[in-house]
Image (cartoon, rainbow, N blue to C red; front, side, top):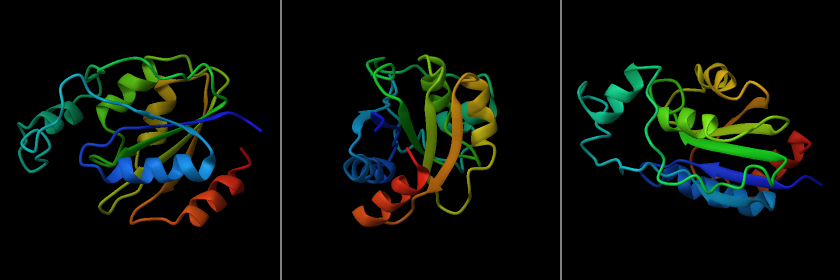
Length: 159
């Protein structure tokens, strides 16, 4: 059996709840991807083109700083990476996270929460950030999936 890690970014708490449940269902360790500067409600206002999140997402070069680099990626074979979908892809901080660690030889399985869209360009963009990893589009985990649903999903992945 492989050693698993659930690493997640959550701006509002929705993805955090899913990540914690997924870690329990998968028997995985848990790590929160935190920005050095927290996102305020104003920073998350997607209707404001000058808000922090809007500005970050307009630039493919944006790499918000991480609060720490303490994730034990090296000690895990499988890393679930979770995030809310922003502008049809992963938030810029996920690119920062993926480029901050060596994912060579790791299986990276993405999961996300979304108000209405799928993964969009997330897989393609994140493969560029960790080209030596096996990155898989996982699942949009909206609502409150049960422990059984999550365990069945993980079991079906063969990891």
